[in-house]
Structures are given as C-alpha cells and as structure tokens.
Image (cartoon, rainbow, N blue to C red; front, side, top):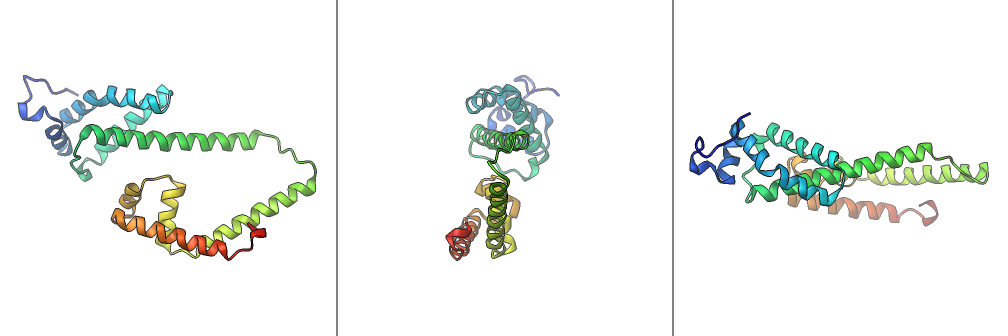
Length: 197
C-alpha cells in the first residue's frame, strides 16, 4: 500500500479533513496515510490506559479495520485526531473489561469453593437463584427495546452514542429510554421485600 508523498499528493489532500474525505470514498492511499500519521499517536496515548503493548497494537489494528469496513457510514469528524483517540479508548476499555471478566470467570472456576458446611452452600445457592429471579422479573417489566438498550449500555458497556447507533435511534432517545428503564426497574425492585434481595 503506497502512502501519500508530497510530490504525488495535491496540497489540498495534505490536511486531515481532505484525507478523511478521500478515505471515506475508498482511497487506500488516504487510508494508509491516516494509519501512518496516527499509529504512534494512538499507541502512546493507549499505553497510558494500559501497559499491555500487544493489546494496544491489537486494538489499534482492529480500529483501523473497523473504520475501513464502515467508512461509507462514518461522518466527517470535527477533528480526525480526537475521533481516533476517542475510538481507540473505547475499544481498549471494552477489551480490558472483557479480559477482566474472563479472568474473573477463570478464577471463579479454578478457586476452590470453601464453605464451612453443605447447608451454607445450599443457602447461598438459593439466595443467588432468588436474586436472579427477582432481577429477571424486573427486567421482564421492560419493553423489548428497553431491555435491548439496558443490555447494550450496562452489559455490553457501550456508550450512549454506540447504543444509539446499534438501535438506529437518536442519542437523546437513548437517554430517555434508559432513564425510563431504570425508573421502571427501581419501581419493580422496590416492590420486592428486602429479605428477597
């Protein structure tokens, strides 16, 4: 993949806005220029979030693959640099959360269950089952779209903007939908006696 060079590139394509516009139109040279121009910036910034250099490289590569695949649907950002920094930060946070969750799952599986007696374990299991039942019952009080919004926001850790993109509705509508969902959940959970929670 060849990169832009001053002698081959018209001066109006040297600025980020023009390069982004060309990239959106499928210009592979513009895409390569974005990668070359911002890889080190993104790498140094990402290392402040996590010291895992391989994870950082993977997230940056994944980001560039994602924007290439979705280039036609991307808007023109006010600042290409800010857009890419924000996007890589979201990817890193999601990935580190996912890795932490997997690590916790592995530790939970491998850690011996130390219970002073079988009866205590049975009580713990029943309490957990009861709590899950209460939460599921509260979630079932939500509409299908409310459940989807809650899942994307709180279980998939997406931003409000990302939830809005996934659900194809405005960000303001997502704020309202999630706010209403939380209100409904509080109402449902408040109906349950404290002993069951």
